[in-house]
Amino acid sequence: MKSEQAAQLVDHTAKSETADYPHYRGLVQAIFAGAFVFGVVMASLGALLPGLIEKIGFDKASAGALFLAMNFAMLVGSLIFGPVCDRFGFRLLLLVSTLMVGVAYTSLALAGNYSSIALSLVGLGLGGGALNGAVNALVNDISPARRGAALNRLGIFFGVGALVTPFLVGALRERVGQEMIVYLFALFTLAPLALYLTVEFPAPKHGGGLPRGELAAVLRNPLLYLFAFILFFQSGNEFTIGGWLTTFLAERFRVEAGQAAFVLAGYWAAMMAGRFVCSALASKIKPATLVMASAALALVAVAGLLIAPSQPLAIAAAVSIGLGFAAIFPTTLAQAGESFAQFSGTAFSVIFVVALCGGMTSPWLAGRLAQTHSIKFGLGLALFNCAMILLLQMIAARARAKKP
Image (cartoon, helix red, strand yellow):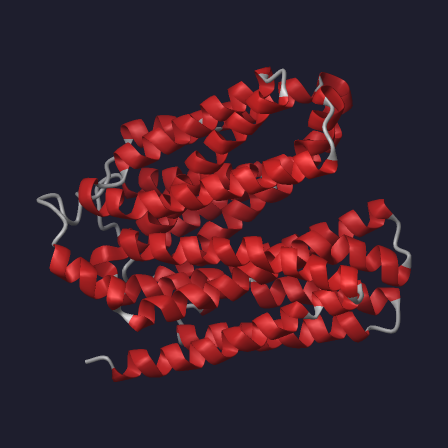
């Protein structure tokens, strides 16, 4: 997406929401800048890994440990951000997390050994996890009438960051070197950092202290965990398809690596396009209906990918999976944000931690199934995940309907 189109999307978002706070448009820009940076964080290790291996020299097991360290740190960051934002507001948490990401990228550019790389990635995961949770919770809080639309738009900017990253690495690595690219990623963090220093934020929801009784009631509410496990399975789907699609296409249809990468890019682009469409549909379709319809489309598309008799049909199915996945994560968050509006930060912390566990577990399990059976059997795990999303969303919709 061109920068002019991204700017127009921010302006459209700012105009389409009610101006609940002074300098609202600046706050919207700050939120989406943060989502873009987190997209870069999510995609950067995979894009930079070959260059890091070439520079330092370590085996695949050590590379896997880097992913584990970064993902675990992201989980910790996701756990911390919610209570901090509910108690102290968003500005401090966003400033610290964004600064941590910038420092981590700078450290990664300078890293000369494996331990330094690992430490940099822990900082990147910790700051990125907190940043992601905070921008989602903040856009939820300032868009009470249009949560679904706002969170779907937020997902677009995350997708732009994730999509731009490998293209930048591929296009610039031979020209300027990987070290300069990592410094460029560090520079990306300056835009949201400057905005977080200058825009006005909503006041903390519980500036006088978190009411323990009400907080405990939220944490005991089964509805919270229904939403969390919907996103456990959805995050597992996104990580599994994103991680194994190119391997499936190569083994099943002998798709060359470069072409398979373009198919993967098409899958992510379809997800971004789907979120753009869903941002318009969110006010016209019930959130539960939108999630269930999306999960059903994804289930059919995954089945189509697995049984496709030809390469073109497999590619069409892969793109359709992206469309099916598009609405599930942001629209589920919108439902949770509405249900737990007074403790949105804490609720989102629980949800993101559970979702990340799914994102870490599902691709690993798919790999084990692929090793013992076949890659087709491994990707079949996504069918189970889609079915669980449908079932849990039905239960959650009934629970919300009964709520007084």
